[in-house]
Length: 373
Image (cartoon, rainbow, N blue to C red; front, side, top):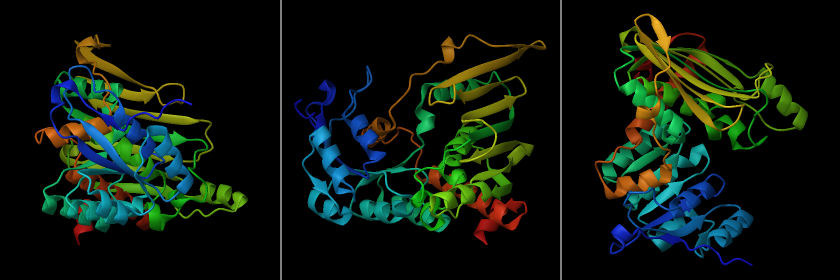
């Protein structure tokens, strides 16, 4: 029987520092965050030392299994008990969407820094509450927009930021599945807990990439459509609950006459098993970020106009390495100037998601300013 891995990591450059004590809550996705916290730091990076001090999950079997896997003895079914007993420096929240705000606020008020899975919350009002708590606390809150940290996304961003593409005026962004409704009958398919279907679950990533690639322009209005017939029919056959959309699409109108066209689906009759693509167009060039062979491996395609001829430039000057999101969170705790997707970023995205949902429900174009009324 192999010996459990240690729950601490010390970088030689920071060995004298006390380790950051981090608790991980929700061990489905959270298991990957534990692994990321314990992974070696990238070459040349001097991350502070970290101790994964405690785990929390409502499933006792999963809690026990992950605790044994990583050699972490402090295990809790109650988040409140964990906070009171362990008093960690930071918490990672990989919980259902409706728990992000109450758990995040409690952690911030207890003096913890917070990394929260996307989206920021299940409703706009809950996201506002969490963002305000982050500002009041003076602690750092990071939203795990994991696609930003991949090598292909970082390469496309570097190319688009270089100025060689000129003014960026349009983007298309997609994440479409033929049959990909997650965990039938779970919180994902219950609006009161998730806040929505694929627009919230998948769209938060793809919409973020499109807007990030374009320099985070202001979204002025949304015109969206929503459909749920296929998801309801598939769920009925399984005897499971489904009250969210299975498809959402539409247009974001941006400042300066620019736009983002989007489509997100969990289920569609197209034969596209899983397509992920974000395409950004500029007057002098553009970029495409897409997945390969319906999988989770991504590539960046770079394009440039040279005297009327479209070329693919040498990508080497723009190529970036992948980063581990939870390690970037740790880096930000040691360096207040280190930029991360923060609570303000999460709130801007939540407003877009809320506007898409309301536009689809009301069947009209909706100005984002209407959310403030």
